[in-house]
Length: 197
Image (tube, rainbow, N blue to C red; front, top):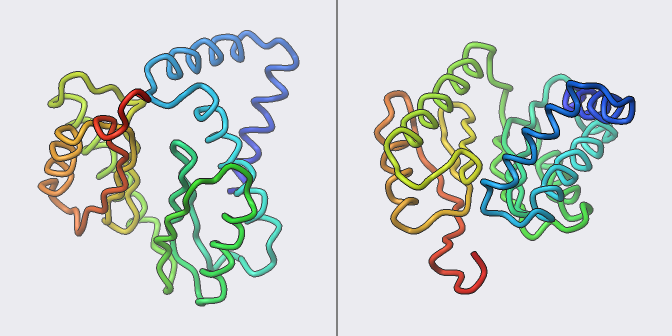
C-alpha cells in the first residue's frame, strides 16, 4: 500500500510540473475512461477510494509486516483480499471501508492465516495475466477496462460491468485455467440495468 501511495504522489507531482510523461499518461487514462463502462465520475472515484483506503491501512497500527492486504475498487465497490493474523484485524478492514466516502459495498475476502509467499504471489500474477489474455482474446465486444481479475492464493475474483452472457464466458475461462482453485463472481450485469449502461 505504501508503494501505491508513493506512485500516486509522484504522479501528482509529475502532472503539476507539466512533465511530458504525465501528459502522455493523461492521454492514456482518457482512453481508458472512454472504453470503460463506468461513468467518468465513478472511474475517478474508484481511484480516490483506493488511495483513501490505502492511507487508512497504512495509518492503522493493527497492521504490520505480518499482514498482507490488497484493495481493488470498481464502480464504487471494493474488494479486500490478502491475509491477516486475527479476526480483530479483519473486522478493522470492514470498519475502514465504512469510513471511506462513496463506497457502495465492500467484499472482505481476507483470510486469517500466514501471509502468502513470494512464489505464491508470483503465481497469482501469472494466473491473472493468463486469464485476462484468454478473456480478451476469446470474448468479442469486451475491452480490458470492463473487467477486473484479482487473484489471491490461486483464488480468482472477477469484477466488472458485463452482460450475463459475458459473465458466464469469463467465469468459464477462469474456472478452466490450470492452477485456479476457485472462482468468485462479483459482477454487475449491464443487461439487468436498463437505461443506465
